[in-house]
Image (cartoon, one colour):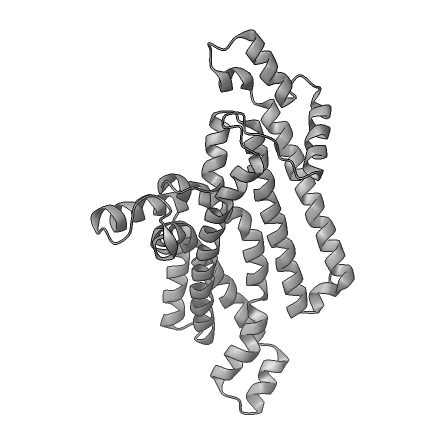
Length: 312
């Protein structure tokens, strides 16, 4: 298990390095002069030259990348050129809003998806199974941004059950503001997880230890909940870890539609103003979340099922 853990951590670091380097090069390849966009058309040549030197844009691209990683190793993500604040402070001020949104989406969608999938697998080829399949496919087919707009119009504007914009103050206020965004980006995952759990459960229910448990006279409920579901949810753990990247991208739509603070909205605003340090800081943290979530999912999967360690 120790060797497997070291390998997964090394792979996560490699993924982070490749993704951040690619994003660094892509941002630099965007047409236009970022300094002129930041300062506006009336900026003097002297001020433009000063900001260019301050951002290191007068250096070769390889040297800019080396400086970026050198500062990163010291925990320095740079300075926001507009506010003068440290990028680390800005990013980590927005990070909790995105984390709470993603966590809420995962909890409710995984819980409901596992229940639907397990119940459908326990009643295969019945009307219940067919209804569950239809519901799952319907959930998957709805894009997150469409669902966000519809839920905003129906539940916030028309019915006025939930607030429309913002993140709220205090625990209950924040929870109230989380309902619609978490619903919008989590609904499609209910369908994915339900179908995955059903397929995995049907495979597990045909294994020898399940037949042995039935031969000993154990109740079907105990067989499903104790012996089958534990193995059936292993793929779900992996999917949730990999799905962190998709949830981060879906959170961008939710944060824009519901005017919520968060990393997604921060990245969009920073790209619009060509605020390089903030963009790189937000991308670095987002990529780190994705790499960490996939590594944790693999480690948890290997802990629950020792066969996963020997398969790698």
